[in-house]
Image (cartoon, rainbow, N blue to C red; front, side, top):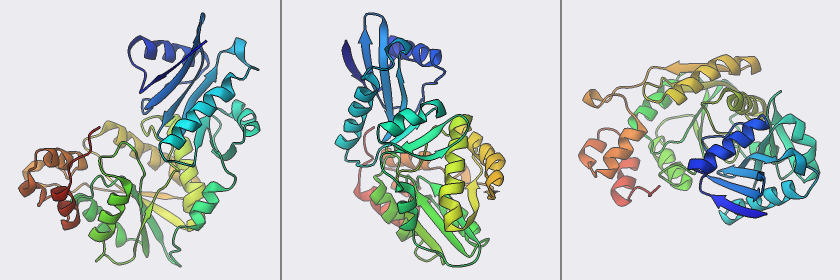
Length: 318
């Protein structure tokens, strides 16, 4: 048996992997960045993938179930997560495999009828929520975003949302695909909103399922957020801007409108602010201008904290 790693799988390997997963009623997640495949003479024997620190698409060929292949794949992926500097490991699997992974030391965080999110520690999400600053009484809202970087469009959304609640959380997502490291984005956001009252800036940490364009993943992601994060923090409203550019994000907004009310949350969608002849404010447009070193244009699109950062740093290569 041969073990090979891909960052990520492409070409015929990806085709073989998708067929293998489909035969087991699994779908390859387009956000995957790293894949381990164990090959034997019959083809794929076992596989598993990573999206950031989340284990996904872990599977063993039916005739090899009961062997140690599943444990071997999970061990290799977990070591890869640790090599990346992360101690906390998450796993997304189907409910029928939940007990098997519990036997391997994983704990259930949240589940739907089609997916389960597990982690390698007991009570991890409760511990994280307990560390989020309390916001007191009153109406609490939240904006979840990469802020990669924060733009004047984000500030417009924050200012409008802040008027509709007593406290507003800004959760800065820890997405490894972002151009700016999460620590820098947190500092940038805190500086940009320092004069806006009743705003609390927090790292979103590990608890994001990803693949926002996929309905099944979104159901798990939004149930997790509503029940395990928003409910204990007393958050009743989630605020978003309309999405004129990204069909995937636009689809996610639609899923939020449908799913969040099922768990007692309201979604409020604001019209996006336009940046004159440059169209709507967009982080992707800002990142392009940053690549081009067009700081004159950037000065009209981002708060001072973001402009200073971009003037002193180069975009990270991806």
